[in-house]
Length: 488
Figure 1 (tube, rainbow, N blue to C red):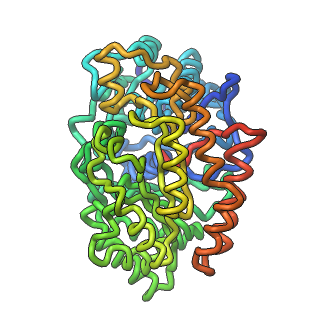
Figure 2 (spheres, rainbow, N blue to C red):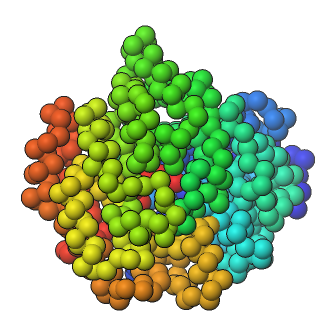
Figure 3 (cartoon, rainbow, N blue to C red):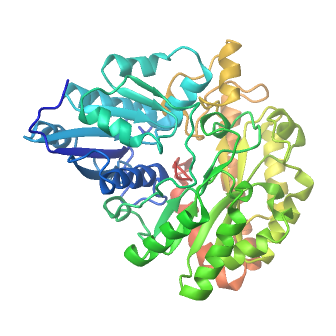
């Protein structure tokens, strides 16, 4: 269908879908915690296309919606699409596997009203990257006229918007083998429309790089974003930070890079942030994700601290070396976990670790023992526990399907809080108990008091507030509450 000659405005709705809870209701919070980086990326790209006039005389109007904190006005989008001189395009952004069922329902509902719809993100990209045939759940979208986008769109977004404007969207955009050079790409822009509904409106996300050089079998990054690190220029990153700080009062940033320490430009970015702090009085704080060996990079920890790093998330995953070997996480050595934490703590940077429950050699008893070692020997300031899941886009998922191993078909459960496959050494009940016990064990009153007793006095109250969050949010009435920890 082609757009009429009297059309004058393309309304681009960037939508981050939520997910369904165990009872089938859409999860929506009064306030959010971590804004979506994918929303910020697409908002920045759309604004860039508009400002550069890449669609000629077409006016582009942007709408940024995060369903985890606000209701999606499906009827309103449909009415906008029918309005004289307007066309609506709904972009379901950064859709992860546990969000896919909800995203599909939104997409199909809008298509029934004639709205153009695109769906992208990790699930679509991971499935199309690793399997030659289109999976049934994606085919259902294609049959309804939904377009799916596999890969990143920085270098092609203006083309996709033009296709939408001219009514010739392709069913599938396969961009996986043509990743964009991020060096000079438009930087993410936080939308006040979305961030005002979050607990801290001065906290936003930015990805400084994408990809990961390692080969962890449970990870989707390496197949969705690639093993080659692609990165934004230090000038781009600092310009985006300076703009957000001056125009919107943003003071805290989450660098969503899967591994900021392996970003080839990380040193220059940190130098630039130190200079901004010293010369311009722009004293931001930031959180980042790094690997365990990052603490051994000469000067990296100290420079990160001087630049404003307040928290480092480290994927330790397991204290059992056999688990790490089976998962291909060869960069982790359990004997240096404690040294890594102490190095970061000495630099006054909080350490949060990620820990996976349900790797091949885990048992209910061994998990309890390893978590106790985590508490007593490694001593991180925070920990997040995840049930092992075979995420589409990972080598684990591909291997299980190729071997005919049964996995749960309900994608709502792929949130790291549910059992989605059989474990060789634990029953489903044992696995769930081990997972819930790990949370309670780490966030016991005894351990929280021990952590508060050793943190730097300057960050004592920040740590205290974090513990209040975990105690009130992550379990109620004996049941762990699932919620995304990081931005997509």
